[in-house]
Image 1: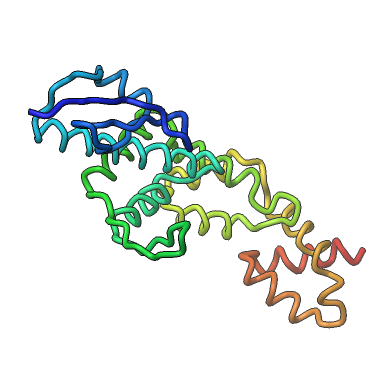
Image 2: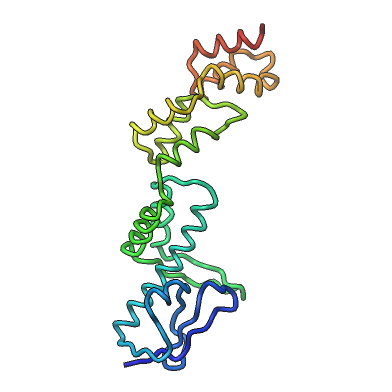
Length: 218
């Protein structure tokens, strides 16, 4: 049996504490994990207990890191899964002293557990993400419904939800193409055909483009 001989706050991160086993640093945990697990100085642990706590340490680190990334801007469930998938790969990391070391990836089981916890807490919500994307994507510059739909599908949003969100968005190709034309007209002055091709690449239909150009010219 081994014994917890110290629990002390980290100097660089007050939300984490260092756990000392038999006088030596073994791993760190989030403060809430220590309380949740009921750890105290003097607790005796088996090697199996220590291995399980080391898994909890990895879970806490990955959960907080993923949550910070997720809160930087809205992300779809597919994007979160891809972010966590990358964390399962070993990767080189440059330390402060300039030395490059290989950081071992986490297990897929751990990555799945983090995803499930984020989902349970409501941080992963494809409907909320899709509505945010449809509302703010190219809001000032304009974007076609077709392009919005393609972007949402690429983010892993299911087709029924894509159709629902676009119908709710209040955006129409008539309004959006007027924004794009006003933004890009000077750039394509004197080359109407090239401008039409550009607008088609943005997902607008030919007839809508011609009507939009007529509105702009009038």
